Image 1 (cartoon, protein in one colour):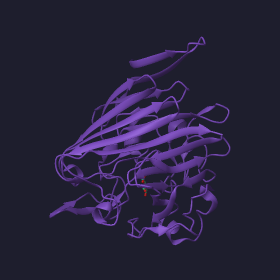
Image 2 (image 1 turned 30 degrees about the horizontal axis):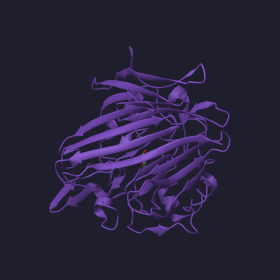
Image 3 (image 1 turned 120 degrees about the vertical axis):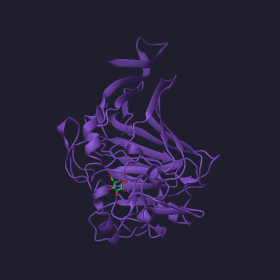
Length: 372
Ligand code: BGC
């Protein structure tokens, strides 16, 4: 049964049609454990649609216009909950409690040592074996005067995947009539813990399943990146991008240097690294990335309050069958994971991911969709 939570129509004073933003909620099957999954459809007055399920706070679909106003679904994903549960790889999900890797699944806060599941070789990746991407969140939708908004809440108990403290998390997705998707993350804890939340959508601005992303032109607003060891843990160095295939300060096609015999590209199997975003002051909302797909003209601009961005060029995609029976082969999608740097709990020279009782974790990333 489809339930319309809220539909607001702002009638245009000078014309006969109405602009409307709305949020629709419907049942979307059950998890293996029998938990009901819901889908929320956010629409804006420009015809953009963003679909989100409460399992993993996953963005399952983004319909965005090209330069001729033709819409296409520009994120990879699946048609049913079973595939999301079986074909992991964090498609569209919010990852946490700690997005990215923590070396050997170990960190300390003061005199307390914590051990996390080692689910990525010897390291802990994206929150452990059962991260936030695999939890059913509590969703609540509202359409406001000028946007369609969905909040998703999750309680992560003390000791969840080895992390200390009861963590209360709220993620808010807001689709505005300016074709912006604003993602706000908030969290509080009752014990000192670490927190690093991000969004793991795989983008292909030519359309999900319609080929690889090597022709997309990417700009990353970063003078440095964090090189990694062979297990993808940062060495601690902030390396200048000058003269390396990691220099995206001017837009470059993803494929233009990805096959170069560069030690870091070989380790990552392509791009799978964290860039150190240029900021005037820590925590300011500033430009992180711009992506342009020349055939469709679609553009994506990413701004964030976070200090880093993991640009992952879909090197582990291996032909999974996704929406509409289309396959997601090697590098058919890419992620722009705004975040604190990997392994920050073990690196004093990286911005801190420590969250104390009484503090509120509060970060925002804005995805703006356009075309030219
Ligand atoms: C990581 C990749 C990993 C992928 C899993 C990315 O955030 O950087 O190394 O394979 O997530 O989908």
